[in-house]
Amino acid sequence: MFKIMKNAWSIPDLRRKLLFTLLIIIVFRIGSVIPVPFLDSNVLAQVMAPATDVTDAGSNMIAYLNTLSGGAFSNATLFAMGITPYINSSIIIQLLCVAIPALERLSKEGEAGRRKIGTITRYTTVALGLIQGTAYFFYLKNTTSSDGAHITIYNEGFSMVFAGIVIVLVFTAGTALMMWLGEQINKNGIGNGISILLFAGIVARFPATINDLISIWKLGSGDGTTGSAQPRYFAFVIIWVVMFLAIIWLITFMQDSERRIPIQYAKRVVGRKMYGGQSSHLPIKVALGGVLPIIFASSILSIPSTINLFLNIKDGFWGAFFAAFNSTNWLYIVLYFILILMFAYFYTTIQYNPVEMANNLKSNNGTVPGIRPGAPTAAYIKNILSRVTLIGALFLSIIALVPLIFGAATGLGRLSMGGTSIIIVVGVALETVKQLESQMMMRHYRGFLD
Image 1 (tube, one colour):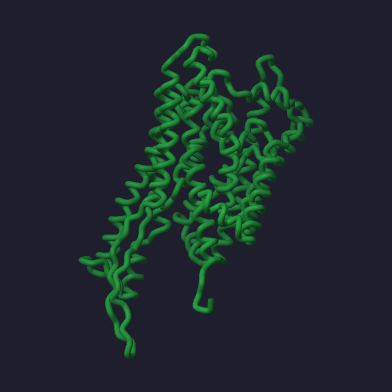
Image 2: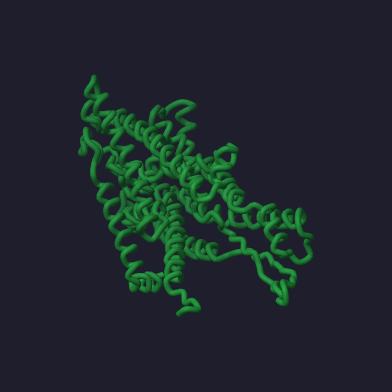
């Protein structure tokens, strides 16, 4: 990876793209520390300070948004909402493209249709950012410190209404600005704009994860908050580090894994020349959706906690219901597994059309050895897609769930979200490296005029 970055840096055009991407990341990080107005920063720091007990997972919603936003959420800054509204908007629009025929036709109209879908996604992102920003404002308004101090400066009358409108609009503007920054990376940078910003936010939280590991290690030596040595915590840290390395290896392995369907092209005579007759293959990636099923599943499971930001219910049936959506809860883990499988199959459905693939092979005189052209070929490809997707989804589920199970079994809830962060970071890094490789290949292509 470092060699690819070095080679890309030696190409002037790619160097400009890399510098532009770095500039956008710096702007993103600056916006992540600019606080919104009408909040008491001292009370906010006291309320949002991480618990001294490293076994406390805290609110799953807050931990999730804080991870994706690079700590901006807990500090209530300009980019506090992160890219979560854009992710949720993409999920909604892609699902609607399958369910609504008008949107499905629009998505198949080429570049013009994709631009219209992109515009709809942007408007939906702003709407979701407005809703999520409103929920966060109510959370800030209803949350007080241990001595009863409010995070919001104005808490009654017209001043409270005006301050609330300003805070919500600033959060929404930050969402729109962050989406625009991602599009600028796509246009003038190295691509994968939203993923790059997501990568930058998570990497910014790595020092906090390392600090948690150090705190757990101190618990093993008796220097932690318990005051007595607990040797099992040494083993917990070692297991987590081994798990970290294993996840990196598995993701790298999955990115390059594919199922190759053999294709045989028939010979045909055109004039005095003979064409075809060669063998080829149809590659089907095992991890077609990459880390997107994990990101989408996490976003869906964060919705109940988002609703509870409005309601702030902690007791009774509904309090227990919202508390169940915590990364260390077994119900959360089971639902996480199911959603990853669903989104993996959903991505395969929208990316591959077995009937269209079979028709294309037939029109080009291509056949799968031993399979008749047409409907039998489509059924054969569909069967392979189903099995390959299941294998990829199970691999992805194992990678995503092992850190959560580790957190639930050991009680080290705060490290459970760190596993998901590793998956996203490694996946985005590999995708970005492939993007750079493809751009370098285009710039070093030697044609017959060279």
